[in-house]
Image (cartoon, rainbow, N blue to C red):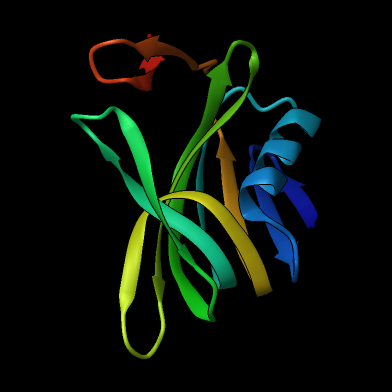
Length: 138
């Protein structure tokens, strides 16, 4: 992972074999990011995406272990219990299908290019019993 900073924007390259979610959390901790928006693209050969089951209040994931283009990663960083908290969604495509959803794992097969736009606000999250989700707490 390598990055450069231009004012409130971080340009991040995640290299082959590195995991996206842990890399984003690492840089958030390293640079003391309280809140930010994230966008990116690249290629992955192992990732997990899924949806949140509203009735069961649990994440249901699908694992993929073949080459896909990352056509879009979008999300945000905030804080939960004073630690960086990542919320990331993605779409992935190969020649036969496009899949997507909430991203919990994404190993880079070639490279990923990410843009992190820091904000001036500190955004915290709090667990919501009704939804079973960690929601923004304003």
